[in-house]
Amino acid sequence: MSLSNLKVLVCGASIAGPTTAYWLARAGASVTVIERFPQLRTAGHNVDIRHLGLKVMHQMKGMEEQVLKKKLDLRGISLVNPTNGGTFGVLGGNNDNKEKKNNNNDGQSLLSEYEIYRGDLSEIIVDLSINLPNPKIPINYVFGEEISSITRTSTGHNGDCDGQVEVGFTNGQLPTETYDLVVDCGGSMSRTRGIGMGSNLSPKDHLNPVNSWTANFSIPKGPDDNTNTNIALAHSAPGGRVIFLDNTQKERTKVVATKQTTSSKELEDFRQSLKAGESQLKRYVHDIFEGSGWRTEEILRGMMNSRSNDFYAGEWVQVKLPRLYSSKGNFVLVGDAGYAPGPTGAGTSLALTGGYILAGELMSAQKEGKGTRAGLEAYNDRMRPIIDDLQKLPPFIKTAMAPQTAWGIWIRNRMFSFIVRSRVLEVMGKYVAPAFESGEKYKLPQYEWKE
Image (cartoon, rainbow, N blue to C red; front, side, top):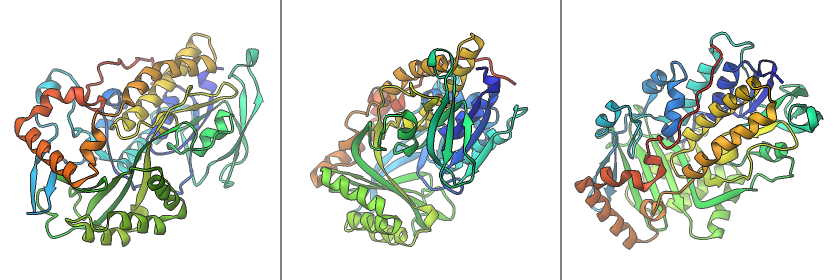
């Protein structure tokens, strides 16, 4: 099957989906993208671009310029001291990385130079994919649609993946249609993953919980939110509760509320509230964080009154599958649906890298006279070591970010103050987590893209 004749359906229009569509179209494929929500989602927390993701961004013409226009001007994180209204110091971001950048090294520290809200990044990549110069067929985006069934209709030579599949849709936005390849770029709880892998998987199969969840929303600015707008504020309370405030926006303050659970019951209570809908979920978050001190009462009141499209909550999980494609059909996974990394800071970069490598390996297989299956196998093999490395949880992240006891918070705060004063993180940062590495460990493959 020639890639120039490949008809591809991409599921999901967050970051992985539009990126995959962009590169597949660059390779000459005909691409349709579906998204189960009626429009691009603007809610969600800030994400950053690191590692190989930076190198992919640099090859998407115009992307870096657009990201820099929308980037968050966060210059540090400060732990607040609720007893006196002060802080335990400010841990900076990239102010000290100029030498690295001048040496063409993409190394970044705690805060990425390319910190941006997820919704803004999605809009940028969608726009780049829609306005891709000279595609064989313009990428078609269809919102409010999702897959209901995938049935293999034909097989290639020796029954490999070079046949076609018939795809049925849930909401009637698209008719039942035949595709050469389906790419699931959904979230970690993707329902499409189970349909496409052909193993009667439930959305929870192959999920590794990290016993943590987060809620994201915005609230009206408080009287103190117009000062130190480049510094994010973080407050911890016993029970693994943490609230982050981002004041970089002009009109509203962004909030991230994170809970580190200690029992399966706690986690199951959150999951049940998630299923029950936004109203009950907000009430659950409210009850968990009530009495946390500092500005919690103001923050929770603002959350309960927040706009519907501005509230988002979800569980942190890792997705670990033995293979990224189905051996029984033309189906493959990119991004969180295939390898959600959890709280490692690498999810966005994995999504960007995965879309690039999938399209590149399919194109390379076609040039070598091989079929789709060979491209999927090469994609799986290229991504596996990268995924394994970037799914490693940073040491002590749970206890450092969300201590369970008041004593643990006291110790953490004093350690934080020491780190800020001594600048020790600059020396040991590369050992703390893959999220702080430069990405030089893995070289981004170079492909001959159609211009």
